[in-house]
Length: 398
Ligand SMILES: Cc1cc2nc3c(=O)[nH]c(=O)nc-3n(C[C@H](O)[C@H](O)[C@H](O)COP(=O)(O)OP(=O)(O)OC[C@H]3O[C@@H](n4cnc5c(N)ncnc54)[C@H](O)[C@@H]3O)c2cc1C
Image (cartoon, rainbow, N blue to C red):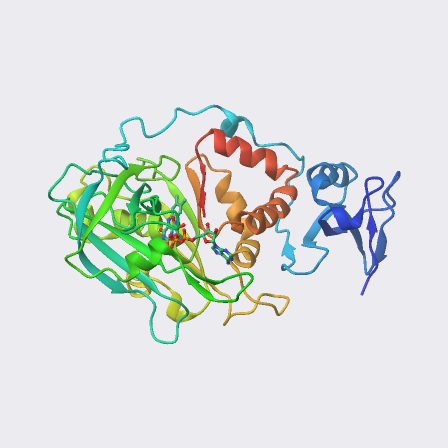
């Protein structure tokens, strides 16, 4: 193995994430860089916060960055296919403040004090044999009211019963998993994808079941349920049928993506939406623990087979697949694996990125994209802020 050195002044190793750059074509670097050379390459360790700056500096000195990998070794090395001759920040177009989408989107038609009573029409298991946990696809009738919604919104559910203080339970939000037309494409239903929350009491160790998720997962068809909403404008799909839509989801984070993908690719949906014939590119990264936990697997794979040029499907199956370091394959490892390609897509104005699922999943994704953006001299954090302003970066984690 090689040694490496920290560049860019005094750095607390423990307080910073560090990345190792393999650089070719550097003679000797003046100043604070003290590289170690091995077979023509120079290895330098760069703190996360200084990646963009140091990339520009290396390139100014005529160096070519061949690969970047995190110094802690839990993500794969990312080869650099090409390094731009002059590092520029491709920010201008994405920084421009875009018009806020969703002006005409329905919001809060039913409030908690006057919820809609929707009958449960079906409640089906989504986890196949051998999978972990209970996840259900639940469909509700909307035909008795005015509840309308679009893809990417959520509804509230108020579970039956009272809390420990004897007060009615508060509502919980759930991402809508169906298109605006509903699973039967008749504008009369809404569907959810719900995982039963279970955890052990921190002191007694007793198994605790989440109130609302348990209520929903065990619903008998025919039961009427208090529904509020819809809410949410964060996860709306662009109207542009040529958009590029990158989706990164874990577990029930698939719910809004199911709605998008059904709208894009299901035959009956395409018939129902003559103004939206999707001809862009959709790429779903889906993280699950085991193959039987791949929710909606058959339909996803069918759509992929039917539209191979428009839909790409990449799984990260943590307990079955290994990352390049031999550890479990989580979604951030897949993002790191394709980071250069993703970064190149992300720089196109038509590209939107959506993240949905487990809270905390953004960190690993940011790390992978930081490394890819740094190779072209771009500070990812700045760039992501620009995307957010341009309504191209969408996150809903819980
Ligand atoms: C915008 C949005 C969209 C969502 N979409 C979905 C969706 O599509 N599908 C879905 O299944 N869920 C979704 N959720 C989550 C959902 O709203 C509920 O939070 C979830 O179902 C749990 O609710 P519950 O009533 O079952 O649990 P509760 O009975 O409310 O229990 C949750 C509480 O238990 C405690 N707790 C939880 N885990 C632990 C632990 N490990 N140790 C100790 N204490 C713990 C915490 O205090 C936590 O607040 C979404 C949330 C948001 C905000």
